[in-house]
Image 1 (tube, rainbow, N blue to C red):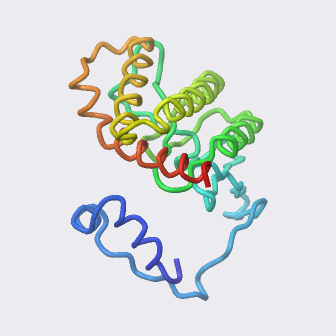
Image 2 (cartoon, rainbow, N blue to C red; image 1 turned 60 degrees about the horizontal axis):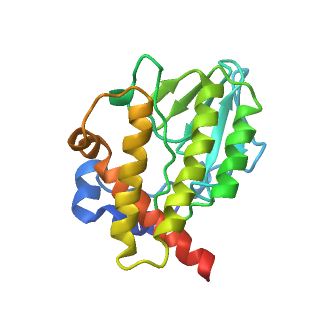
Amino acid sequence: MIDPSQLWAGAMAVYGETVMEQAYGRLRPIPQERVVEAPDGHIVDLRGRLLHCIDTPGHARHHLAIYDSYANACFTGDTFGLSYREFDTDQGPFILPTTTPVQFDPDALHASIDRLMALKPEAMYLTHYGRVEDVERLGAKLHAMIDATVAVSRQADGVPDRHARLVEGLTELYAARTTEHGWNGDLAALRHWLGMDIELNAQGLGVWLDRQRA
């Protein structure tokens, strides 16, 4: 926040400068005296409405989630996965984890999800996108998808053109799970809505596999 150059460089390496400038403009530093560090357990008191800061690594090591005790809801960033309204069915929202570069850690992500679930929130507010309820079902689905994602990455490890195999494996996984969820779109529609996530998740899994080998 005080010096966003590293954050900008990391995001630009993923998305490219043109996309970053079109989507976000330019990051401006925040004066140091206006920044409050929020370690695990830090509470922001908004005239009696308490916002609890919770350390939730797994997607990224610096990730914080916010628990609003008044609303009994969590603002989860990417820790509680992605849920696009285009995949909603009679079964409710569909959810999947994000493994985008470069700090995916499945064990930490499982633990962070469990920590949020232990609060028994009525809803999760996801950065991508919006409020979701039925938290117990979605948490269980997210745990299962993390394990399935890890299995896809293990199967791709060591094969020629690993990235292409990761992309293929994730596409197959998401197609199977959305079908189970009652979504009736075809593969072209799946790639339309999830194509960028598939690409970025595959990149993140590649980084994770390399880190495991190291």
